[in-house]
Image (cartoon, rainbow, N blue to C red; front, side, top):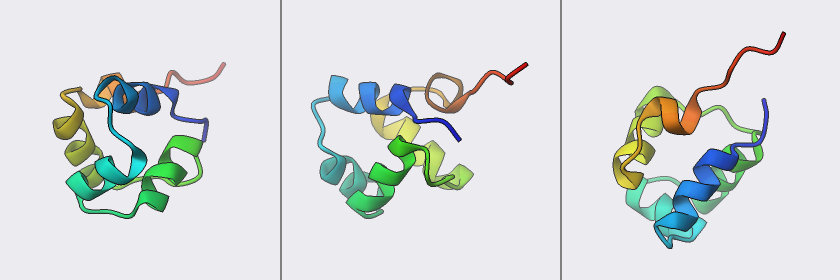
Length: 68
């Protein structure tokens, strides 16, 4: 899994720290960090909570083009 730069950029655009985003979606700061680093595959429920909090779609934050 690749780093999730799109998630980090959206979080920064909203001027939120990892801890603030984590609190809003009900997870630990470490979970947000691991998602951004590409070391944790979040559940669909968590992805949706993050999208709603940041005003983005699943495609905008989590879609990856298949590698050829």
